[in-house]
Image (cartoon, rainbow over all chains, first blue to last red):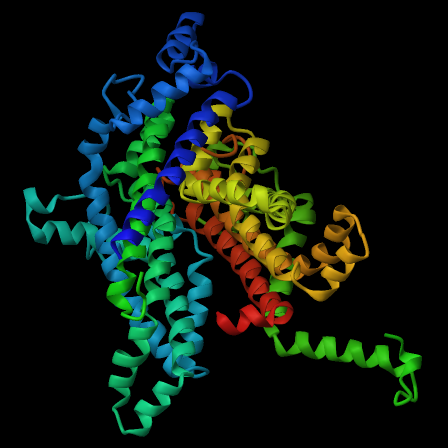
Length: 314
Length: 295
């Protein structure tokens, strides 16, 4: 077991190095002069030279790469061109709303998608099943921001039930204002995620329901509830949890859009502000940050399989 | 296998007719192909010939700005008095071009890399680690970074959406290659001394076609969504081009009073992506029943 954990942890290092190398090469190999693109249309020659200097583009490429990796290993994600602050500081300032939004979204998604998918599998072919499948196809097709604006229009503007935009910290303003502001972004961001997880849950539970032990459980007169919960869902847990992990990538993309629609000052907004200000080091640092988080979450999920399925032994 | 060798078949000419019938029956038993195909066909028709019949999508008319949908302006006007209907129709063309271009290029690159990875063991480990790395970078962020480095044009937007899609295709092609290469007919071809490129072309490639078509439709749908998201975030195609994402981005400021500027292109986009996804589901059920049973 310990051997497996160590091997699995070590296996993430090459993936992280490849991500870092790719992000590094993106700046160096992009066609044209990235320094002048970043500097913008009205930049002077000095501006371009200064940005090139700041990005370290004047040094030999191998020296640049060694410095880059050494910096990363020490937790240095780069420095913003305009504010001159380390990207890690900027991330620390903006991370709370993003973590909160992600957590509420994952919780809401699991609470909705797993029961939906299980019921759809249980009643396969019924109207509930069809409705879940239609929803999951539709959920993949509606752009996140369109959904966000529909919710704002109906719930905030027409019905005036919830505030239009913004974010209130749970720690500064209390739970009530926090919830009132986070409900719509959570629902918006959840839809595509629910579509994905419900579909996967349905498929896995359906497969498990074909198993002999399910027939045995039913034959010995166990209630359907118990069959679904302790036989079907438990055995279907591993693929469902795997998809939740893979879906985090989808979620990260959605966070950028959702934060923009609802004016939430999180990491997604940081990316957009950086795009508008042409502050490339921030974009670069955030890509690395999100990719590493994604890799780590999937590492944890991989390692957690033993909890869900005692048959898996390493 | 020749038909003449089988004495049971009395009338060889009925055989193709039967085959056609059964193919039709398969398609008929999956109505999603028909529904998705018709919907998509309508959107393609709108994108191809629609712009010939609408008003000028970039003609300014400041007197009639922010007019609600009625009469002359079916979908209303935006903050510069431009006809939203004309802009949405022109946007269809851009969305479809991006969707088709991205899926075509991603499948082409993915096929080549995937076949190399699946067939040449030495390169497999390296290629797959690179693909793992690429897959762990969130697609939208990767596209935003690529565009902000090389400037926003239609070409860079297409490339920026292709890059994160490639690993998914590579993985799929590789998995097909790994199964097919163990088949007796491939072993026979190797034993007969067939050259590697010919084996790949004649025996491996045809097996990848069915899953590739399915994958290409999904990529097409997600590429159209990504393009609109990039446009919406102000990191996509230049704002003077009326893509759906750009129209919606411009409508944000006026959303509370003039929601139609966002709603109509949003509905058009959702319907188009939905039709592509429905078509993809139908094709998957028809072409690849093995996967269909699992999903």
